[in-house]
Length: 307
View (cartoon, rainbow, N blue to C red):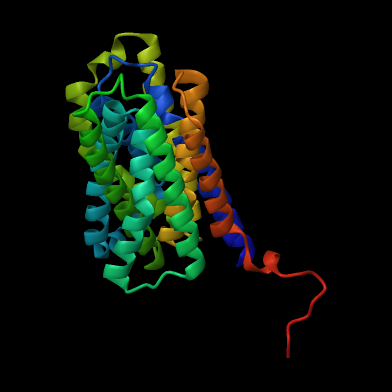
């Protein structure tokens, strides 16, 4: 059980790292709209996941039909998420958009589990989430202040709203996918069916807005990278991890994504992150340590439990 949990944590961390590259990758195609970027990334990547899991989806079609409410809810969340997420990054900046979206997801995920399952969160999880969210807030404030001259006052609030919508839909499809797994669906089937349905919903958006992808090889390469690496490989790994850890814990682990986004924004995009922002990065890493460190490691070696 401990080993399975550790592998799940590693898989979700891998997902967080590749997801953290998406905002920077999108800056290489500035003439492609946020809707087109989101539709290409999640739409094409989602359909690829469905094709990979097609045999399992067909074999378990009766089970999936029984889970149709979860499947449709998750598919709708998958379709809305990238439009909100990439819109947030375009309006409020790479780091701020990522921070708001991913930083809000743990609280929203916990709220979903509390309302729909009556699940209580542990003190350890609560402390880790609090540390991570404070770190997210520091990154957001630092990044926003450093871009005060380049980001319009009206853009930031709208970007924050879209980020919160992205956080809610991210938490929602994480919860529905895990619920499907707990009810008997394999992780590849649950993720493939959910993202395949969401991908189908995004195809009209891609057809209407995706013309600029054909304007240059750079734009096309950005679209292909988004679909193949963060969305296809990243979500396969995320589904593997989600089958082994709770959805609320998974969303906290993915707080590492804004750290990657912030570092890449500084190194590649040229965004400046003040000292307050780097303090936030350290707090997010500390959050990961609190959440993922096994309890047994914290015991002193050589001491037997009291009898």
